[in-house]
Image (cartoon, rainbow, N blue to C red; front, side, top):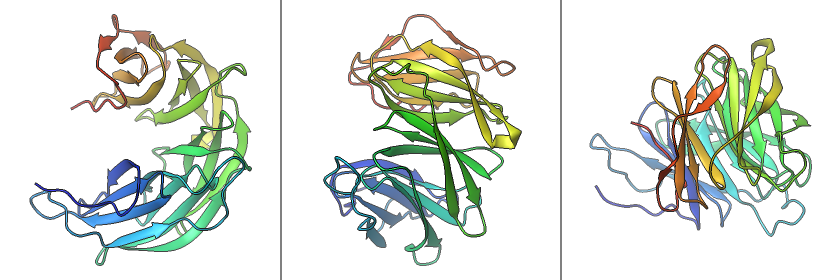
Length: 265
């Protein structure tokens, strides 16, 4: 259908706005986020906006902004960009007629946290943030009226203090459990979600059966969890117990060269 420039360097994440008319993308190396229109055929039009994260300044050890994720909040009125380089999650209002962005709020982690990935609870008032650099996670409050995110205190990833880079959160459809991919510890951390999404309680970790699980995904029915293990070139498949949140490896991981993303269909 064609290609379009993201307007930046190192594009690493994209998502589609729920209305189906706008593509959101994040450029890691240049630290900016872009918007493209999607026509009726699914093809992309010319970029309608590009915003570079210039403030706040880069966090400790960072040379500049590093936009790592760009998603739509459950209310549909705001889009959020997670920037590892500036230790900040940016909230924008998306003009759904023009495809332009207006900054609504900034939420800053503690310096050096390196936020990477944000996942919302089905209730829409809380989200869970994986901090890659300092190996922590945080529960966030979300205000749909303003788009403002409030980041809570850092919590354990279950890595027991070893070298670890948390990658991605998943939340079960019923909102009862959350799962985190741990690169380095090579595990999936399991959390019970409590207080209507406002609290995470670490239940433990499960070995992933591979090396460096960069991304995890549910099957459409939520009964399976797939983990793409980048360094071992494998994908691990787990059966998910909806009642207890327990994970059970479903056979041996299967080979997939340089596995960085699993998208069950």
